[in-house]
Length: 163
Image (tube, rainbow, N blue to C red; front, side, top):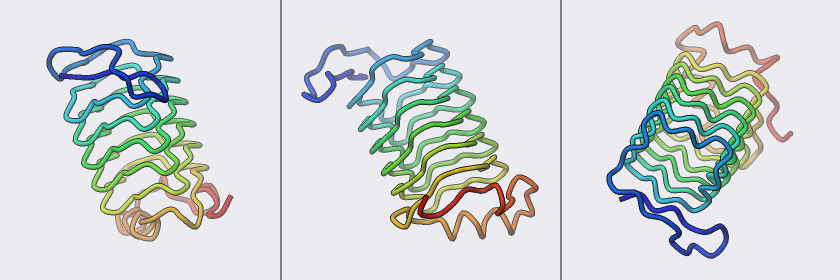
């Protein structure tokens, strides 16, 4: 069961049976506080959606579009985001522990304060990504990309820590 809750209050507005929203067009939709853990959102369009504080733990978001989405304080631990477009997405203070971003495009994303511990960024585009001194796991991401000799990692365009 997927619950969609009201912004700020947490009041349940809708319950969607099952756990699949594959290929759903949710562009610009308010999903603040949504309970989407273990949900299948493969190829879903969530561009500019508000997923602040949403629970997306273990969710499948492969091949989706989250351009400009708000994922501030979202829980994405163990989520699969392979080949996802996250350009200019806000992932500040998000829990990304163990999430997979294989081949994802995070150009211009805000990862300030996020927990990247154990996240897999193999083949990901991380140009102009924003971190700050609260972001956890940056060193392991940097080492991972350097060890893979991925051409997408260039310290000059990776983004600034503390920006």
